Image: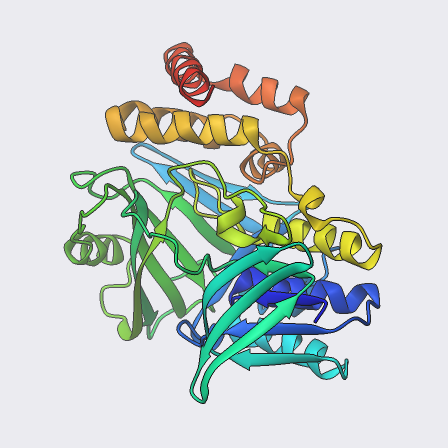
Length: 378
């Protein structure tokens, strides 16, 4: 086997799609334990419309709203659009890619061990029929079989899918961050993803400490009433926690190359990672198609990790200061600069302008945190 991809989430499925696009015709197995079916999930990101999976998005919104106590801003996102890809659509794209190659397949089972050797790596997979050994030249791993899963800080969220009789939602804009919600359980914000003027997902998210369980329900009820949707009918709900990486990304070990969250691609300060996963998948596919070491495709994220660490420390130690920094960033910069910065795609000049836009207190606070984060990472 040339390639084993471990994990059927965003990273594994995206990599299969990008490899198919290159025209690479080696042998491949996608190991998927089915624990988190893609069909019940969705991924959101912003992009210019030129990425491989952009056309498969079910939602593409050209405007976004951000707000806080005493202020509200509706932004034109051009040249970006905010996109949402249903998990079923990503899974279908990967299935089509797998079906296009005779030597590609999906193996349903749980990878339990990965052992690198001189010829590649050996993966043990527990299937319904018993253990199966898969030997591959390269293992692209989003799972980390056998690794400890420490309880880390997370983005804890509860979302309600609502249907109203009257048109109460702004169906042309996503509400990315609205800080007008209770802040007693941490830095919290509301997120609204409209399906139409009468249907939307309304979600509350909290930067949550390890082991904490925020009580979202009363805050959601209050916010829903304030936006005029108190009479809306709940048609579904989703609750989850997005772990925020509290350590450096896993390094490649021989033929075993981390992908997805294990490669540090979920940004600690926002929880977004899909666009970075797409760029990494494209780089991995080019390297593999060209016969190069895919470990070299990993993006350099030292500055971004230092910035994330400083923001997370600020959120933990000084929530009011964190809200001031985030609010100033969202109020005082052009939308394109904000999105490029959040997506780690901003030039050094754009980043300098963004920092210069912050109030003196917020800028000094963030710089102090950055220096501390840099010292701890040496």
